[in-house]
Length: 319
Image (tube, rainbow, N blue to C red; front, side, top):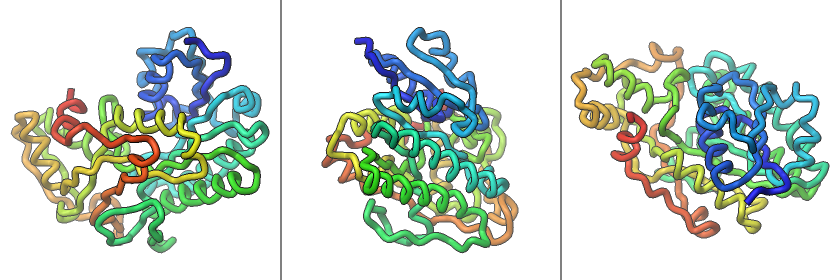
């Protein structure tokens, strides 16, 4: 059913954002995308770019003159605009910090004018260097030292969280915060260091799969369609407002094992190479040894649990 108001998606040309936009349109919503295409891409929206209920505004939030009006006329805002990828974070820490804080602050002010409900995407990076085997939303956070640019993204997103929750408390802004763990799927690029698309691209060419460090660091991968489903369920859940949620897969895998699974799934002849962190990034680079979410809170509030297996994720992403 066509709705009178639109849903505003910042970063809607990004990998996750574009999948979200497609789903919103499929369900009959009017959608306005605001994206400066710095890390997003027009081709991510190629399947829906001519859709009569989609409007795309090519601009940063801070450079969009009508942003306050777009926010005021929205029934809901999904804020996905962000710098992505460890490569970009390490190389452009100043851009990461400035853009994240400035853009989010403008967005929150605009949303607060009419108390427009808002979902802000944060990141599992905020859990920092904690050695816990699993991460819960109320855990203490342990961020690395400011001398390591690698932690600038975590700090910027954590600042966004504090700012959004302050707006929720002091301005009565209906805010939901989600911490996205590694999200993968079709159309994701390895351009900014994303590990699974990077492995798949190399395997398709029978080129070496470069695994950083000792390869024993582990991650959990969530399929993008599962993540979008969780976002939409949270949008509809009034009780979720003012809360923080983990969203991610729960099937843990080491990077070395992931490389082996990709080679096997694609029938590739690629060798696997271990590359020291100081060669891959910079001397003194820090990384998290494990990053596994607890998702019981998501299940409790919206009855959702990730359902796509790691092997299916690899197959669907490669396709």
